[in-house]
Every structure is written in structure tokens, then in C-alpha cells.
Length: 279
Ligand SMILES: [Zn+2]
Image (cartoon, rainbow, N blue to C red; front, side, top):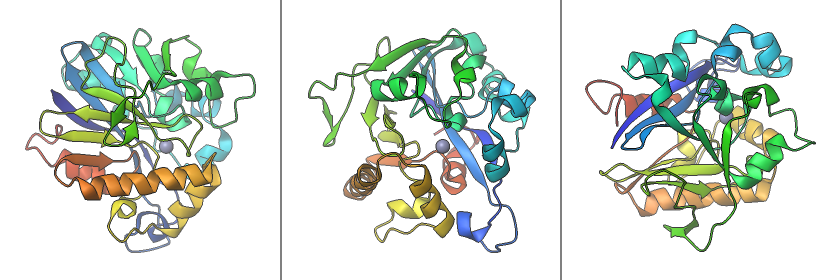
């Protein structure tokens, strides 16, 4: 199973060191949207989508003003998953499945670029985002094309390293599973992939900074505040973040954990192979 690590959106919020931990405060920081493109016998599988063509071409209608002002998205068409799938030599129609960690703006924006894909998501997230009182963080325009949603409710006792898991995603191999990690959003989930060389767990926004997975956990002040500002269930988020850290520390070399927005993690996975794209 081949896994490509893609950055499908760059954001440059002001705050420098307070956000990314590198030198200098009076500069923009770097945040990415780390997505995965997995080649399987059932076709291409995309894990998260970053921003899509409509966000890049018409951000004023697609992305809320406050989000654009705070996060300062770069909006480069070359970063869309659509363009990157093509650059890798694939037909975008071959992306048959999209598995989402959650439906926030910066994770679901690329959905309209793959209108025929089945979209797998944890059921509570689907309800929260598409229900009548959906909060501002969700953009109905990202699913105005009425995707082929597959929402999962039944955890039916499946366990993965002590975590609840949905192991049988419809029409997908059992080597890809959904691991509910609620807290950041109502139905937030990680996506675990058995790459053949160990497990890769995309933890979405369950944490934001690589230091949060370290034995002595630490986070930059702005990212710590941001996570608190946008979470929907704080105790649950902090509990799941703790469990993730323990999981990684208990299984070094067996489980590789990544989050969506950390540029250091993305670069280390991109450079793990000589061609710069695969894990
Ligand atoms: Zn995010």
C-alpha cells in the first residue's frame, strides 16, 4: 500500500514563535493541512482534503471573513488535492473514497473536487455539520453537491490498541479504519492505516503541535489557546490527546502518529522517501 503525504493548504497566521515555536514573533507562522493519498486495490483513498478549487478561486464566498483574517490562507491552486492527484499521474475520478477526520472548513474544502467519491465520516460529525443548527465552522457549500455520505455509528466493540474503532469501512480494505477521537469537534476521528510497515495514525486536529506527543508534552501558547477556543468538549479532547500521547510512547516504531497542521511532521514524512512524496 503506497501512501503519499500531501499539503493541501498552507495558512500563515501572524504570531511566529507563539504558533510554530521557531524564532521571531513579528512574522507569519506556518501551518499546513497534512492529507494522505493512499493507493489501494479499491482505488485511490484521500484522507482529508484541505481547501478545494472553489475556496481558492472564490474565498470571499467560500471561507468566512474571520477565518481568512485570522488564519491568512495562502490559497495556492497548486496545493489543492485535485492538482496534486493529477501531478502524481492519476485521474481525479480514480479517487473513489474520501475519509475525513472531521468536517471543518480546512478539512472538507476539497470535497466538491471529487463529486463521485464516497465520503466516509464518523456519524456524530455528519449530524453536527449537516443538521439545522450547524455552527459557523462548517460550510454547507462544501457539500452542496450532495456527496455520497457514509456515516458510521456502530462501534460494535471493535478495539484498536485500546481505542474504539470502526474497522469495516464500506468498500474499503480493513487496513484503513476510523478511530473516534471526539473533543475538537463533536464527531472528530482519527484515521489509522496499516501501511505494511506499521500503522500510520492521522489524528486530524486531536493535537496541533508535535511537542504535544513528546514524553514531556509542550505546546506553543497560541496553539494551546486556539485549541481551547475551538473545541466542543474540552475534557474529552484533553483526555483523547493524553491517550494518543501514551499510545505513541508505548508503541514506538509500531504506530506513527501525525496531526493535520504541523509543518515539521509533514516535512519529516515527505523527506522519508527519496521521491519526496511517499511514506
Ligand atoms: Zn483543522
